[in-house]
Image (cartoon, rainbow, N blue to C red):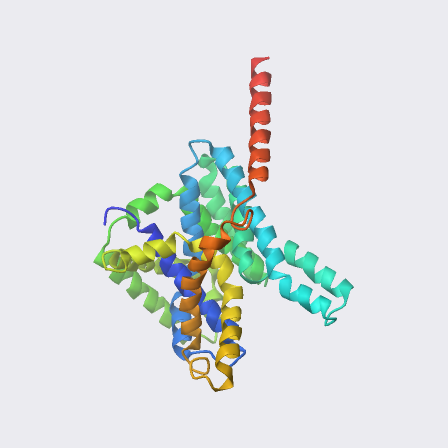
Length: 349
């Protein structure tokens, strides 16, 4: 392999995300499979950092050409997606309100809070808006301070007992790593290396055993932010090496297609899993074997990937559902043109 198999890496990550979310969604129904928990133990904390590192690497390509224009367009796009899909995710609560299951003041408070403080899977889109916005203001020569700031923020918040803030800086660290060190990471990941695979898996396993052995002093992987960072970095190394292997198989084209639909799958799969479950219950009744099976989370997780891609084709025709509407794009482009004209006028005077 002469390049990083980015789409295959994203496909691996989104498939596992769908499996894990299927497991969590169906757990309350008694449909959780033990084998899925094993996968979550191995891959769980690698997936979102690898997504954000890849997002940082993608944004890094625009740093030298039309830097601000591309970044502003991305911020507007993700902000729009966040607002639209938060509104869609509120539909069940609207139904509950109309049926009188919740009073209006309580509903309004919950609805307003959901926009200001994301819950569920939309936190990823929310974080992307913040991370990209912060990257706009950081000069290349200060990149080491950005990395150190993320590390210090993560450790400080962790030892202060602020878990969500610690997680924020933890994920920001990997976004900055991809954004500021894209060339080095590309050089490191662009070829398959059995040595990298074996060493990363070996060291990762030793650290994991260490964490489990000293569980009385360590609260899992998040017991020490630096242990978590190291294990995540090692996990990303062997995760990318596995992608290199898969890219050489007959699954390569399928995985690349899945990887190119990462965001639509991410947005659609959560409500889709529950809709598919309810439809199966409706059609098959209470005597079904599939839903009662311990493999239900696997079934619905994998189906959510495929069905999300199928639904994306007709749904993308709906203006504003997966991208900002044309009027917003035109408006922002006009604002940028006015700003550029103002700057050129100021410079000439």
